[in-house]
Image 1 (cartoon, rainbow, N blue to C red):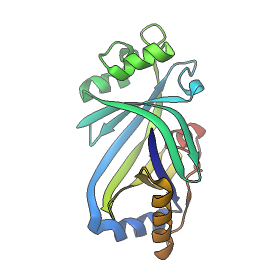
Image 2 (cartoon, one colour; image 1 turned 60 degrees about the horizontal axis):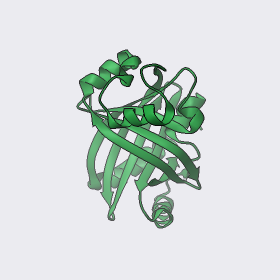
Image 3 (spheres, rainbow, N blue to C red; image 1 turned 180 degrees about the vertical axis):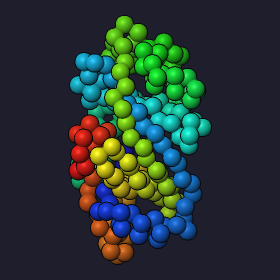
Length: 201
């Protein structure tokens, strides 16, 4: 179970203010392309699951993940997540021809076949996706991820922090944002849900 605090930043100014304050603590910047797959019958999403290919830094790496049963309440996200590395060349070929997903060697895709019946017979389709620039900061023993997410219909900014003590982390983050005059709100939708809705929250 992945547990994260998710706070949506009010606007571009809030994002720039936050990343400027945190700049001494910057660990790395990741450029992500996130693409999602399902069947024509929405077999996975109808069962509250998401299959994602995430390409990192111009196809240097690719991670396939299966997320299931997400909840997002008061800025705290809980989701069952399983992920593994894929060869980026093979993964990119699957984007061009999603039917290949049912044929490649992958523990996660085997799970999708076994648990949802999706494989070579019931083919995959690519739903599309979005670009994400993620800046990772090590601040006060926390790993903060500040995202600039570019959808076809607009841009969203969000702070995420995975923690076993989400309420404590949320309190610390809220105090920090308020002290620095940074506008925010609790995230109410996952990035995938925003993408599927076709509009900014």
